[in-house]
Length: 515
Image (cartoon, rainbow, N blue to C red; front, side):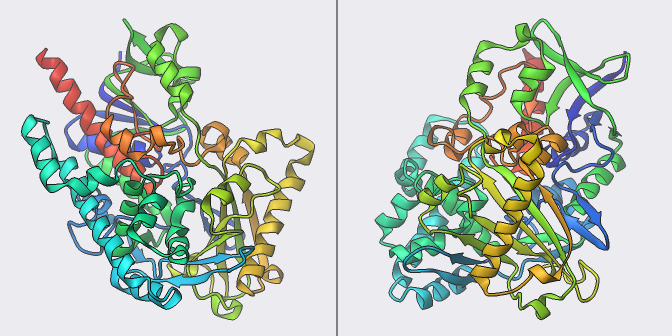
């Protein structure tokens, strides 16, 4: 009977991070992946003479200074930072609204000071409130780092928190918009500042200020990066390092069963293999819903785990269009890297439109060439367009209407980009590929095609998840490392979640051994 210290199911971002962390900590680890390449969403593919990035727009919390930025620290500790050829993202974003009475077209830079000065140009009189906002954001970030450094909680910490970290305590219950209004940020400045909400898929009347401000403050102060070889370069770097340290990875290995003994997960069964693989620690880089519904016998699922999992809602279902154009960005007039295009700056109204295929016009469009020169043949351009659906509307599309429907959305995206920017791209299209929620569901087994895990509801947002860290470990021996975990959605969050879950599992194993 094969015996491992740890088994990780799925070589997506969270799984790769978890497997590498376990192996680096001396755990004999088996990494299982159903595809023939690592990465999950973090991969690339070719169409004609273009290599398209499957999903990454930019990796945040990754400073250009060694030892700074939460994600960079993890990459450095695990020994993968130097294995990747990094490119810096040139600008923060360009936000455009199409249907508001007062339309917005704002190009925003990196750097907090530069951002505030640019905001003052767009919204005269906003500088003072924006300075206050970012000072508050820095205080909240410092508290977050302090809380993350706590190894064991004791009564003395309460006094320290109440005396030195009251800003965090004061803002914790409130949404981003509630705090922005309290600080006195003018409406137009709030609208421009809120542009990044689409990367969370949650409106700023709902998302916590701590989550949104923490994300934007790190983004603007540290900038962002992407890999020259697309996100697949990052996935390969993790896999190479894992194998360098003696880790074992099996590809084309689909886990269809979790093995249990006395209510505890002790191993896995791989389709097509006669014997099970056993380990003290099993980490799953897939949705808890999949583990409960497809991998476990109902009798082995604690009622609390079933109730908690079913109570949570899935976050945005992804739709992406990939375009290879036969003209250069300069020829097309494309100057920016990232375009946020909305009907309205009212995020709550925009989210409501994202419930259906017909009404959803929100999109993030990225010109990869502006971040990675030479990513496509000379004289060409790579663009990719992404939107989210907040309801499972694609499951209602009839099979005979599927191709027509995805072409309808793709054409609408192109039309809206041309309308918003005044640039013409349609006649330059050489290659086109489209991924719908059905595509993502098929490729990664993501329920309903969600690319963001569980929705950031008020009761299930970042702050409640951090405060309840470890509360999802409801099935003994089984842990989850993905966008469904404590850190929520996104590349950086998935890497962080995998790293943290692996360390938590090791710690818990040691505690159980003492008992």
